Amino acid sequence: MLSPKQKRNISRIIPFGIIWLVTGWVFLIAETVATGNQNLNPETAITLTLPVFIFASLAVTIVGLLVGTVELVILERRFRNFSFARKVGYKFLIYLTLMIALQAIFFPIASAIEHSTSLLNPQVWNKTGQYFQSIVFINTMIQLSFHLILSLLYAAISENLGHQVMINFFTGRYHKPRVEKRIFMFLDMKNSTTIAEKLGHIKYFDFLQQYYDSMTDPIINHLGEVYQYIGDEVVVSWKEDLGLNKNNCINCLKGVKESMKTLLSEFEKQHGIETGFKAGMHLGEVTTGEIGALKKEIVFSGDVLNTTARIQALCNTHDEILIISEELKNQLPEKLETRNLGEMTLKGKQVPMEVFGVKI
Image 1: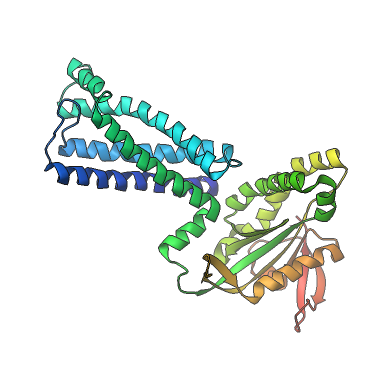
Image 2 (image 1 turned 120 degrees about the vertical axis):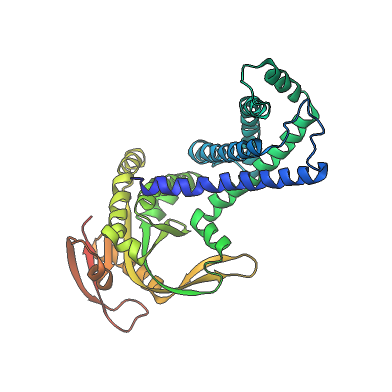
């Protein structure tokens, strides 16, 4: 059974394979039309036959998936702090080297299929050698460069927008506003002002990045979506069914607490400042849609967001790490260890709301 993180990675890698397959077909069709399906360079180019077409389609898809795997598993984190231009440039050179190596593997196989012969046939290797010295090789490298640029652009957009947000944009899911029920968690860092003053802006920013990094796996593993980073606060959202299932929304915060133990302990030893987090959760209806004139964003609009922020603000007063609304508590399928904090009239509200501290 695949974990949520593995499923997410697979869903991000598959578009790489699709990009490479579709652009490969576009180039192939364009060349076929331009040459009248004639091989003008039989000494160095592979003649297009049905078996060759099938192999080429599989090969280019596999290469795309390989690029996606290398990008997301190895390179994405390593190049995260580079500028966009340097990131794309370095990755491009790495992938281009990989493409030359893959051609050295795939071209002899395609040549053997074309001639219906063995890989050991000298004719196969003579043609491979001529290919790497020909204009056909240069043309192939130009095509591969186009594939790579598209892949890197997709990776950069996915990384900056968020994979799910990008999918929602391309599918037009929220082009027309929708009303849906969602769970929201507002999670805020404790003592952030003191920390920022002591560390200074640059070091505080670096710590903030580590702080958010430590939340990543718990959020992914419990099917949450990061809606916004607001300074030292992060807003996480779940579709109602996903957040309630197995108490995902609550267990996410438990995972964050466990994941942060080492980071916060080391930070306290180094700087003598105790920090941590506090969170508020609530469930309610929001209107979700694309909004903006100078740039588009998918935005949640509804009273539930204001209410969740007000619930989170109660944490300091009641010395709680997590406070949730009665509505959310009543919907959760698994029992929690809670403390009834009573009915509160939240700021900006007229109707009192019962809230609960949750032990995590």
